[in-house]
Length: 476
Image 1 (cartoon, helix red, strand yellow):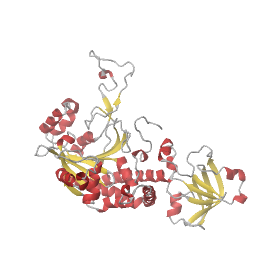
Image 2: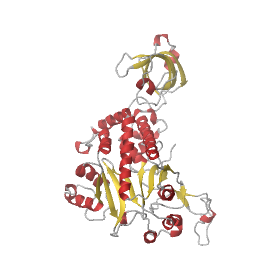
Image 3: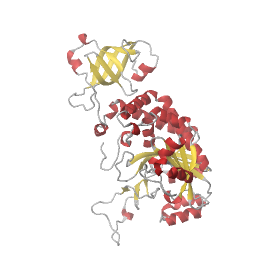
Image 4: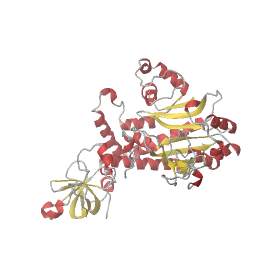
């Protein structure tokens, strides 16, 4: 019978003849094959009787080669695992030239592995990251399914810019060298495929709101795109977003939902991916030993995740947070890169992390932000200055979740759109929600890759998505 490596190492499989397939990680002393099939971070040791094995076959057992092994599962003689395989026969399914195969058993830089992203999951680090990504994805769908949400696929091609930031990728079928022009000399998009200007979506939120106002509770989990020319370790041009929207739910309910959701999905990973987490935790600790003491994290990876799962999130108004930050030592002693001087400032990661890691020592939800630093669709408070927005702040990363109670009043929403020069005809359908049975409703957005970064301890967002799309890079 054929088993996976994970089954052999974690299940109580009887000692018996078995078959296994996988890739060679190492082959030493012409005798010990470390075989891995991607099912676990651990390899299984396969012991070859080299004296009775064809020498030409032994030479083909190289790092990266794919093997089909038949043998006897026996108790291991060495340390580190309980069982191993005494090999009876080896069939080489695919050779791997050791002179050319890039993922040799040695330390590789992440930059080198990004250049070989099609092979980087053959390493322990990236196989662990991608298994965790898969588990998190499953946990997200599981949570919403068990809590009465309907999964919605929002359009990838859209005519609106939900964020109003203008950082969009245009979608067109027109001839780039000789597009049709209007009488005024501008590109005539009426002759384009969709008969209007279109772009790749920056968010599924607005469309999700329409479904929430009939189905009650919906969520999206799909690709989004930002044409932001940023080469930082936290930005991608293509990434995945989770966006739930709920009818009849106010900001307090939104904060309750987001906190419960984050604790649930991270708790699921703690329970189901322990070996991967322990490996990534050790990797991170080894990396941090190279840093000056002041730059090291106060918590290791697993402690950070437990910090979120085990602590109640502290809820603090933006106004209270500004007072705390304005009067704190790092601000007064000018240790912050961005000093907090007045109400209305847009908080930076350093401020968010101070609130979480130093001041409150628990995850923090900030709410009631100044209206002029938040999006047009957020509900205006009675003070006329703030909106019913909320951000969830995590240790080590700052903002993790952003959400709000949505503006359900037609005239108020129209006024806000007018002030921002957002044409009513562009979002006529969005305004219709406020005409026909409007009600309080709320939702939030979570960048999936940012969550994966937090759960894996990886420092660069390019390393938590299979094939990163960034400025000047669309390889693979």
